[in-house]
Length: 255
Image (cartoon, rainbow, N blue to C red; front, side, top):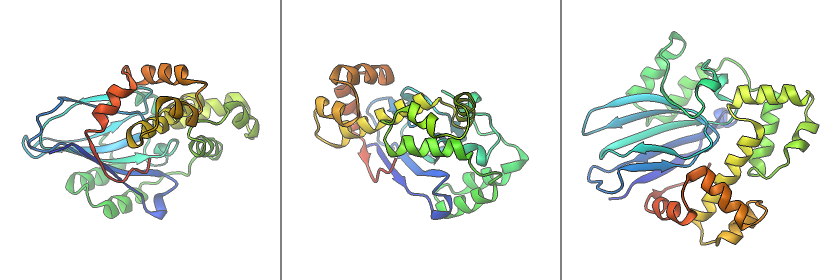
């Protein structure tokens, strides 16, 4: 059997906070690569890991990053995750984003959301139940200036000019950069780089476009620029990563 990955859209009530839910499954009879490579997405994910064979369960946080996330593949493993839109994680949890960057950490078990962690552990596949519990944890609205910049970067798939976004803001560049890094965990330029590369990777894996076409579609100066950026993100050549990711059965992809 194949590895499988799929995504699920959030409810309308949480659509401005969540990119969605995701599920990654390693079948019990898996005997392929012992390592999995997941592309960066610019987001924080709260996830539940469970393994039917070893009976291990773990609730953790994956922070924003600029490179591929590498993890071991154990047969019988299932990962369920909640992917927060950039800049929205702090609307629910107080974990500082600078402590999450490039990290995978156990979810903090504070009184503020202990009931929510119990709900996750009970049935992570009950998306409606999870979202109802998550809504009860909302502690603030997103930073408006940061949210506007995030939306522009998302809409352009990372191809917008950061200088233009700074000019449109109602705060100074220094304030905006500081607030953005605090809420997102990355700089504006870093988030744009991640999302542009993720869009390029989607074309690489899910289409038959050539490298030159992907370079042009994704806003890179030329093919050499695309290949240089790709190597920095993945430490692999595009066709190597494409070959691996195409072995995964992909369901609906929204992010």
